[in-house]
Length: 189
DNA sequence: TATTGGGGTAGAG
DNA sequence: CTCTACCCCAATA
View 1 (cartoon, chains in turn yellow, green, cyan):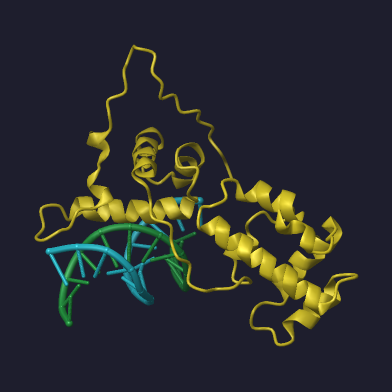
View 2 (cartoon, chains in turn red, yellow, brown; view 1 turned 120 degrees about the vertical axis):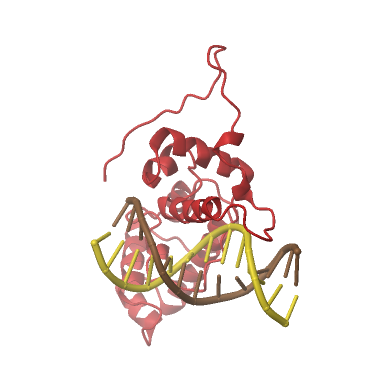
């Protein structure tokens, strides 16, 4: 769309760019001249521009506006080698992450995953049920969920998504050919 | 305005 | 990776 504006970045250049960002973090004085020095054929200015572009993309991704972040980055800016690791590491800008609220749908899928994989297997729950959240996010969500269960019957509580528990799941038809057939792969790190 | 919900994060294991 | 404790802040009582 608006991509024709930026001068062409080759895959090679992007790779160097990635590496440079990781090496020279936000704290680095003269960051951009250092980064530029790492990217053949790109000026400090161009490198800064590329960074702003990337930052915008990441904002969109984290706002959930982009469904498949990984292939988005690969296609739109030739990123490849590091998936979405870069901006999850300290090397990337750390304006406190906003946090996209869980939808009820996601929460239900979480509960289903819980039944299939069991408590603690956040990795597979993330992979097979709540694909929109990372294992860490699932774990964080689970922590809140269990905390609320255990503090049940306590004073003034306001309604929460965590009040939807596993017993609220529709009992999936046993014989009518529905539906809920989790494709489950056991994934090992 | 004090408290709680619910997101991310740090650090240990 | 998972667990636990903790931080932060918006929404709410």
